[in-house]
Figure 1 (cartoon, rainbow, N blue to C red):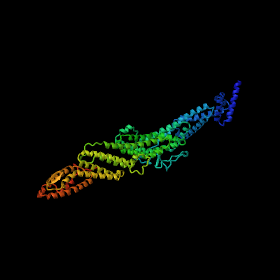
Figure 2 (spheres, helix red, strand yellow):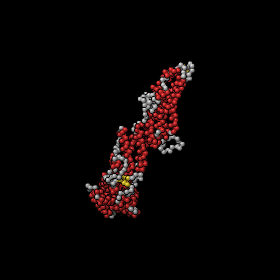
Figure 3 (cartoon, rainbow, N blue to C red):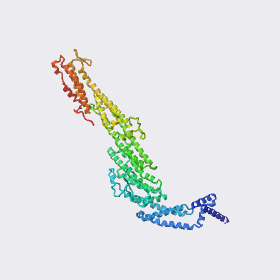
Figure 4 (cartoon, rainbow, N blue to C red):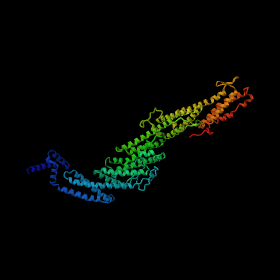
Length: 634
C-alpha cells in the first residue's frame, strides 16, 4: 500500500511538472512521453487514468454533448433522400456542421485522454464525407447536364458562335455575376487569341463545388474528391469528342480504312483537336483552378487526369496515320496532320505547362517529330518508286513517260507546301541555316529526286534502239521537266542555273536528233559532183542516184517520224522551222545543180519527186503522233 501511495505521489509530481512546463496539451504530452521512456512507472496509460480522474469529467461531458449534437444534425442530412444542395439553407447548415466536426476532430487528435471520443467523431466524419462525396457527384453531373456544345462546332464548320441558349460561353469582356464569396476565387483569363471560353459548369455550382472540395481535402478525402471530379469531367470530354465526330479508333481500324474514309476522319480529327486545344482544355483548366483554388498543386494534377484520356485519343489517331504504309499518295494527308500539329504546339505548351502535364506536352512533341519522319519516309519511298520503275516496253512514238508526268506533278503539288517541307527536311529544327549555304535541305532533296528521274529516263531511252527516237524521247521528257520546274516553286528551289543547264541538255538532244536523222540525207544533197559522179559513203553516185536516194530516205523519214510525238507545241514548231532552214536551202541548191546536169536536162522532172513546197509541207507534218496529232500533256 505504501509503495502504491509512493508511486501515485511520483506520478502526480511528474504530471505537475508536465503541466507547468508544457505550454499546451501537445507539449505536455511530449514531456510525459519523455518520463515514460525514462521509467516504466510513468506509462501513458497511468497518466491518462490519473488525468481523467483528476477533474476532466466536465470537459469530457462537454465533448460528448458536442459529438451527440453533431451526430443528430449530420445523421439527419446523411439519411435524407433528397439532395442537400437542392436547398441553399440545408447546404449551408450542413457545411457549418462539417466545419464544427472537422474542428472537433482536429482538437481531439491532439488530446491524450479522448481516444474513445476521437473514434466516434472520426466515424461520424466518415459518414459525412460519404454523403458529401455523393452530393459532390450530383452537383458535377447536374452542372454537366446544363451544358450544350455550340451548334457551330456540332455542325463541324470550325467557327465558334455564341448561340447557346444556356449562356455557357465565357467572354473575357463580359463576366457572369458571381456571389461575394466568388471574389475569393481567381478567375482564369482565357487565351488572348480567342474570343470565348466555355463555362461547362455554371458559376454558382462551381462555387458550391469549391466549398465541398475544400472540406473533403482538409478532412483527408482528397483522393475521393479528385476521383469523382475526374470521372465526371472525363465523361464530359468524351461526350464532346463524340459530338465533334471523333471516335475512339484503334490502330488496326485506322490501318484498314480506305483513303476516302481516312480523309473524312482526318477532317474530323483536325476540327475536334482544334476545339479541344483552343476551347475545351482551356475551359477545363479554368474550372480546375476555380474548384481547387488554394489547394496547392491539386488543380494541376486534377487537370492532367481529366484531359489525359482525350489528349491520348487525339494523339493516337494521328500516330496511327503516321505509321501507315509510306506510299507517296499519303504525303498530303500526313502533311495536313504535320501542319495541324505545328499550329497546335503553342496550345500544347500553354495548356500543359505545369510539371504534371509535361508528359502530355512531350507526347505531342514526339508525335510531331514522328509525323516529320513519316514525311521523310514517304519521299524515300518516292525515290524507291523511281528506281524500281522498270524499263520494259518503250513509250510509243517517243512520247512522255508516265513516270515523268507522275513525279513532276507530284513534286509540283508537294511544293505548294514548301514552308512545311523546308521544316521537314531541315537537318535540325533548332539550327539556323548557315548564311554561306546556297541550298536548303529541301533544295538538295529535290535535286536528288530530279537526278534519279533523269537517270531512270536515260535507261528507258536506250530500249528504243533508234538514236533519233531516243533523242526525241529525252527531248520530250526533258522539256516537260523544265516547264514544270519553271512554272512552279520548284524553279526557286532548284534555281536558274539548274534550269539553264537542263535547257542546254534539251538543245543537245535536238542536235543529236538532227545528226542521227538528217546528216545522212544532207550528205546526199551536199556531195560535190564530178564528171565521174559523187562519192557518198564510199560509193560513187551519179546525180540520178542521188536524187533517188534522197527521195527514198526522205520518204522513209516522213513515214516514221510523222508518227513520232513532240508534245510541246513551241518545241515542235521550233524544231520544224530548224529542219526547214536546214533542209530546204540544201535541197534548192541540189535541184538547181541537178537540172543543169547534162545527162538529165529536160527530163529532170521525171526524177524530181518533191518540190520545195512538198518538202516544207511534209516537214510540218512531222511529230504529229500516230493519229495525226502531237497529243497533249497534263
